[in-house]
Image (cartoon, rainbow, N blue to C red):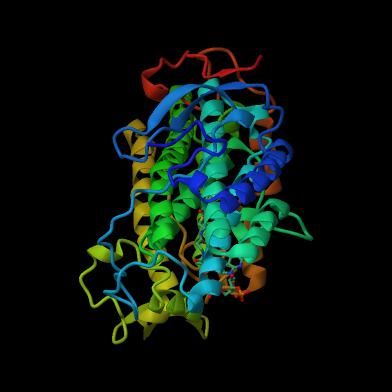
Length: 474
Ligand code: BYC
């Protein structure tokens, strides 16, 4: 169980290590200061119907109740230790999992933990203003739930930095509160976390696409030979599932509403659809293309010696590593990656060890395809002949083999000029953003009411009705 009587709730017996406890208690007000500056706008006095973790056991961890977000009990929760756990891949395969950081892997472990930690506050910063244009109290509560949990994920990484990396770790923990999403001088580490999330369609796309990168990266880190990292990621994954649910159902409800309006009014031209105050399917496709492509970049280069050394050293595994049935060393195998040769996209087989970023990206794409197929069913069920498609893997990429090439969504290699001519057929244009923004000029706060551009969800949170007061503004 989690001890909530402590200043920092935890299940790691923090009180036993006074030095660590003091260091984290020193970081805590800095975190709260960051939340007050960069957390959701104007929200400090709202009471939000939030879920708080009470236990790390799979069956009993959720407790719902009204909480003012600055009083949310952010804390340190690791999944219980399995004494028999071993390193399951790489050079140290078969050795007992490490309870301390091996000296030779200190710098790569720190780097991975910092990169992971950096994304969490970044996403809160990206979503900061969205509460002011929420489509309902239900959705407002959901974004706040996502935000406080991202804050907790930051705590999870900061605990590891403080506990296992001494002074360097404490400095990194401070830097995590100093970088800012989109800042030119001190930006967040990874590209997608410096992109704006200007409206709710972008938010749902982000939680569907980018939070799912979070899932796959956390799954790979949950395989780590460094046991405290593995245990903390396992618990984070239980929270991540809700974020992806918010994204998938959010986009699905927008599609549903658009299709219903198209069918009722027998219209299909995007300008007629917009005239009805809903988001045309073409714009939804362009948002999809954008969020998918920037998220693909988050997996890093297709061929990466960093990824190979993370694996060989036992720091970061593959998706579901222990369920795979090969040798878990990968010294003999190869894996196909794609590259552009003389204006053609061709496969090239490279040592599997160096292609681990690409492999994780491919695992991710499989799950994305399933989600997009579920959105398609919404369109099909209304009988509208529109197909949502995933663009080619090389489309609009800035990291890896496709960076610097101009690939169309259907996978043709184009000149820069030809690509630019079609850019805003494929990606949201400034006009698209302005239109979507125009729908979201104010917030919808009446109990049980939803903005015109989105369908209500099928059910409320924790068995509550849709007209429940999910947020009290005070
Ligand atoms: N943007 O060998 P390479 C989440 C850099 S999301 C900018 O290809 P590597 C969440 C790279 O740093 C999950 N730079 O990369 C979601 C390197 O720089 P240096 C976050 C990039 O190291 C929603 C160079 O390019 N977790 O949790 O194999 C809401 C060459 O690197 C990017 C993780 O990512 C980029 N996209 O792989 C909230 C897990 N990509 O050395 C939260 C931890 C690469 O030349 N991170 N670079 O200076 C990792 O495992 C690895 O850092 C990466 C990159 C997979 C991201």
